[in-house]
Image (cartoon, rainbow, N blue to C red; front, side):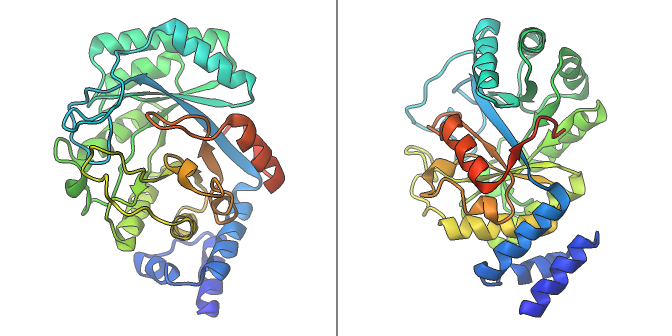
Length: 324
């Protein structure tokens, strides 16, 4: 088993791609051997660079989609606050706040299947104002926009588009039925077509298998995704997944390590649910993960920027300003 791990690590270091069957074998390896090997791959391809971002809930609640994990879906009774698209002043203020604390990337996330044409125009004005006043990279998560709308977003100054695949193609219909994973892939390709970089990952703990997780990682590799959020499900009361058993920190270490073998050059980002981990992701950052969302999540509390920056310094990471 040790020789197999060494052989697969060498294959990746030499520029090879591991197969699904090889990844399934990796998932059975002892953590004390798998995680250092994944971290060695991370150092070889990414060095000490760490991609840190914050997100703002730019439009909250009343979502038309039925994603079973989401507190913002109109299908479920949760305590989430609902409000329309935030104005430019507030979006600029939050961008400035994060920039002043050393965060290089700021993502505006909105609820709903997609923004309306009017909302796209409004938020483009906000992005232009942010880029004029704040030294920060702007990312957006606006749902299933089309190519012309992404073009407007890019011209306004956004650099990256986020849209999670959430799960494997096989498992996705068990998570959501109001749109398809194909719809999401279409939106990501539309963003790529206009020159935006793309960010896409999934949620762990939805009831999926390790095979599903590996299939998801391979799909992301095929799409050429370089920013991969790995979320730990935070079971929200009122959603269909409220009683899902929570994955352990060792589960998450194993997932990010296997993802690193499949996606050696990517920024693998601990995202939602990191605050549920006792060590706040420290061991995952020694197992292949090299990016994170800091501060609060969309509807749940996160980890403070100051605390994260201190941890990253202790681990020898350098927060990068250019991870496009």
